[in-house]
Image (cartoon, rainbow, N blue to C red; front, side):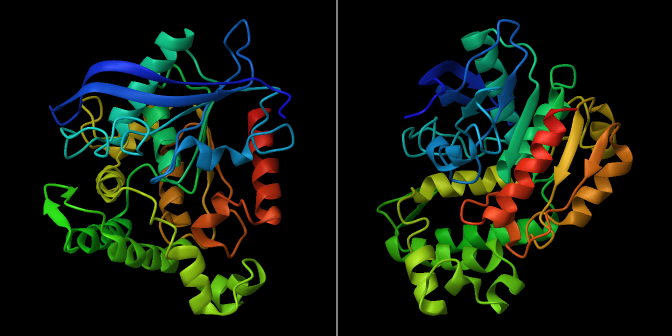
Length: 338
């Protein structure tokens, strides 16, 4: 039993215009909140979801002793478009080919204003694609965001990251069940298993495997047992069309991709007024420390603190790793106290 209140719901956005010029018809945003909104509405943390994740997958770090404390903060998790809870290919036959991170963030800002009367957020915190959304919040609404904590994320998806994503897309599109235009005639079960195994080589570092943490941390008998029990099933319960939608969103993420910045990334970074904490994983293969380091000279008030871990990308979502979770909690609470 929790000692803090929670709420949840689905917010109707109506016909939501997208950056592409398309319209997301009858758009819906699922959400869940934790804690109590202060009378001054000055204790808000927005915590967007990550690739394929739903709010139930990422809420584990919320708690009085967790990374985000709901007895102090009012924490709102908006479910990304395409994750199966908000508008997605799995529940909308007319779901557009591309819904960007910017489209998500603009919808989140509208939802918070209409649902709770929130005009200003104390922090946007996110991991992975959630971290990209945190960056977008800071760039698109510079007067409304006090802090942004980008955990294993980036301001723009790097070319090497895009190579990985386009490989995953090709695997899904090569499935016998693929019908074209981002849709499937039936669930591509064998392909989803292969998808998970490809992910296993990227989500964790070479050193993680070299030291055999798949045995000691996951209790696997050997490497094949680990891949079968952890990665064959990782995406098996997800909808393949939703995965394609999120791949497109991730691939095209770029905080400068809007009329205000014209794809000029340094200009977009210089416009950010939030205090930005960049928390890349030292061994993350998607979002490299070097990518975040390139942003630093353009940010007004920012700090780069790599997570000292061999858990790769998963260092930023350390549900099974108390050491990384403690590091993350210390850094986040330090930044929230600024």
